[in-house]
Image (cartoon, rainbow, N blue to C red; front, side, top):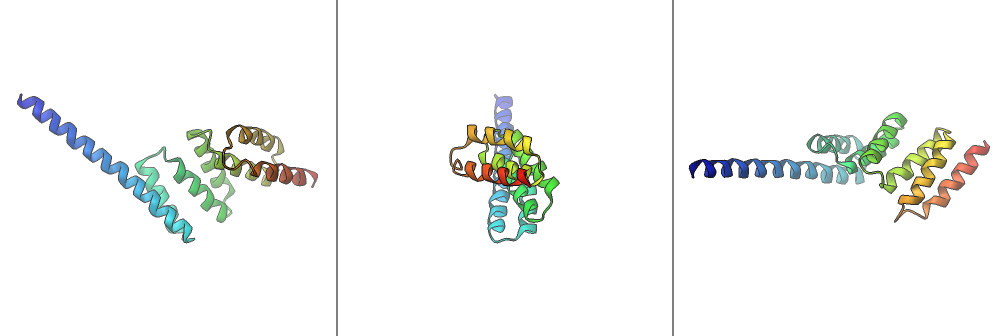
Amino acid sequence: MINNSIRNLILFLFMFSFSNILLAGNNHFEEGKKLFELKKYKDSKFKFEKAIVFNPKNEKSYLYLAKIFNKEKNIDLEESNLKTVILLNPKNEEAVYLLARLSIKKSNFSKTKDLIVIFEDVCKKLCVLKDELLEELKISSKQ
């Protein structure tokens, strides 16, 4: 009887601690998002990185990090974070769209075409941007 009570207490404490850790990671993401909207990119980057420490599968934090690296003109880290988002969630339409735009900038037109096909399959809210991608691809491939 005592062993069951102790085991249940330990299990409860473990679950309580784990839920607090997850909440802390989510709070870091929300704080980072607010800082990003205020264009405080350095501070928001730190918050998103902390959110990832608490939850390495936090696709939204990777997406915002990619946006920050885009602002900083760090193409390699932008691409890496976008690929991580897609690895975590292949149906993240914003990440597919941003990666397609990045592929156009890098003049990787065959990859862009593949990404546009994927974008067509996963888009729900951003479908209107497909024509923009096709136009950018057309203009860039002529240059």
